[in-house]
Length: 408
Image (tube, rainbow, N blue to C red; front, side, top):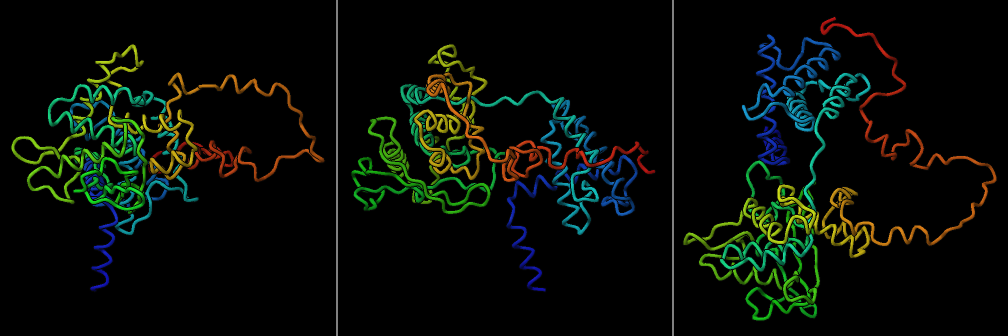
């Protein structure tokens, strides 16, 4: 029994408190829906067939689409929100040793659900991406900084920019935005000169050669990941100088120590914390000061992701190798491409001139023309992007079946 209890504790620790809350909220909505259609004694659909369970999940998804269980501020829910809620309900089924109510006999997402989710996606408005911010905006924030809070925001914006930090890594964020990612603390910031680590109380840490940040816990369960940046040579836009300024400022506060979060700021007679809302306000104020027409950005298009996107864009325009962008920003896949904004005019810098550099090239004929089965561009290849997008969707090998009533 002791082993069973220990295993339960370990399993609970595998997900964050927010995930537990989201799962409980989703299952509570499922119970409300089940009660409304008379399934009071069969929340896990034990008395239904696989096909009937899929149809009931589809009906529940439709009820959520209509925001039946949401606040008055919502008219409808987006496809992604609905899909996530269904996923949490599925987790509750599996936690109680019940089969996945969304999967068909082949272990794939049921055809009816797949089509329903696709229909939701088609109806949803296009997602609005937060615009990438150029470093001139960070310089503007520094110019506007006169109070202790404003100086802290300026230091954090520049320091976070050079490491493409997520907002929850350097700011106080609402509970709803929290994930497993841990906020940085002073102990995670280290300075080196000539290969020797300098303590935080060293009088010349701002003249270090490099600064290293250890991200203790991140998304996808990455732990103790250390990233290093060298000094840039700029008096303001320098990762070493800005992180040194943050460390010096915070250690000057009464009660601060190596465990103090980097978001700390002294106000109201105590240590408080810079919030994501304050950072967004500062970024938008700087954009307004420079001019929306100058930057081609509207203030409502700015958020904390704009800094992370701006970092990726800056590295791309600086012709940093792809693997460098991925490792500095701690992207484990090509997901970082979502942060590269092709709307930026300089995105296509030199592309047209490079495209006409070789105005002639000759094909070498194959001995026997064929397409390799290893070529991911071929249809239905597992690494083909279109194939991956359609996983769980309509499959051409399936025959079209006539429609049946829910409990046929």
